[in-house]
Length: 287
Image (cartoon, rainbow, N blue to C red; front, side, top):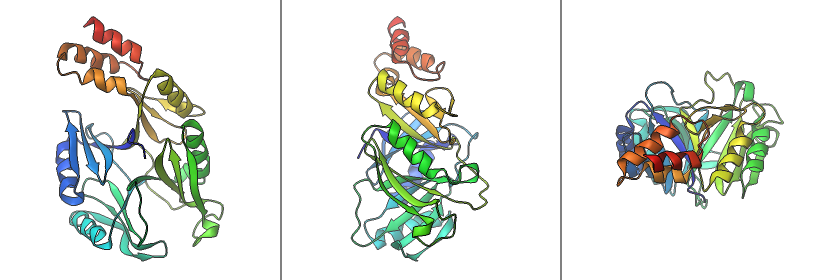
């Protein structure tokens, strides 16, 4: 399991409020916070809440699968989320789970709650990508891309619609799980008429140890149709948003003993697309 990869949820300048909501509904704990982000822990996994404003709205193209330790735990979470949430798939027994339900919470994040007797997972929260609209049928291509770019990656399993209950193109993926640098992600194709797609409302953050790894991941993800954004953000060829963040950035802008220097590093970062550590350190040093 890798704690250097985690989802980021775009919030309408209410990250602290959202963190309190997840504390009440999912027993989340706040790890650290500042005016820009609140980092929380849910079931042992890090989730970043970003105060970004009203620009982007989360949608079910990226959901979070939460593996529950008991049917009672799942019921507790479901009841809490359902108070002001909207079920997308009803809580019930399914061929693949003793208890399962998919629900959108009051802040627009969607959760797949799962329990199966005898099944445990070290990583209890798995981001699940839904390849829809123009991306429908491209889940396998995405798996191959991501596992080729990230180290310590492997495909754990793929179920095609022809192997399961059907309901879609036989060669498309009904459910797949794979690891990127020991972090599990799931994905699926869907040909239904979804009125949403990948956007910046939910992104994947990757903390990197150095410039070499930052460059390698950045170049691999923007290749062949991806696009660069600002402040370490990019979109890959499928439109999924990533933040490639050197750990050195957090060290420099988080230096509370040298606020002038940390602000200079922050100001330099705000002018960048890909994060360049040497330029951050130069700005920090000269301040």
